[in-house]
Length: 298
Image 1 (cartoon, rainbow, N blue to C red):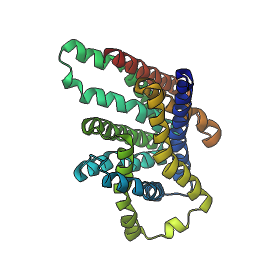
Image 2: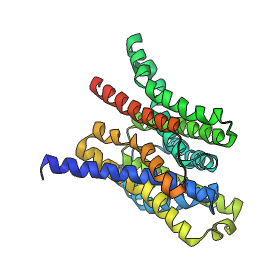
Image 3: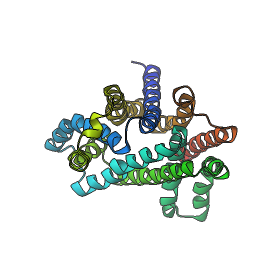
């Protein structure tokens, strides 16, 4: 197979991963606005993902392919598992799906840049790192500023929760880099450890609320979140990285907020105003520009 064909397949896999991740924000927003509670949504996602990935987790442990300790796994499950998703789900109760995608996507690289600022040896390098994300920061200010100017308190609460989710994922990014576990171990470890939420939820809540959810909604949420976002998107993105390289594959991620905002119009009847569209474009262009510059310096 030619390099060109590999590149096309890698690009398609990356695009499909972006579509699945964007769909997660949309289906989560739909769920919390209608028949599914925040805690029930988390139950559906991690009960399915955890059970499906449990055999892989056990097999990798037995074959000594996993390198994370229990303490490290728990730390990752906190910053990228149940608590992380609850921040997003609660935020989606108050703010549109496009807000979640834009603020979460824009916050992560900015926080990572700030957290790694001390590693830069000179003032020039530190200023370069900060300035490279200036468009992202401006885009985030525009997004939240619109809600503040409109005095939309519920949306502001949602936006704050999305910022916190971005900070949480930034910690996950840094910890996963530090501990150097592969994507299969990261995903299976987080999902399996998050299974502890299942008996805890049943003990605290029972199953009445779960039984009240329409079966069609459970199926849709289970497929898109428990299977799609938690497993398939990870496999697709990993395949994309292998075929076209990490630098090119990661450049697709900033398009998640754009796709979410576009799909939210017909599916959720949620529309951004002109200033918010401008903010989305700034976030996308800022993340891409900073990633390309950092890759060129790396």
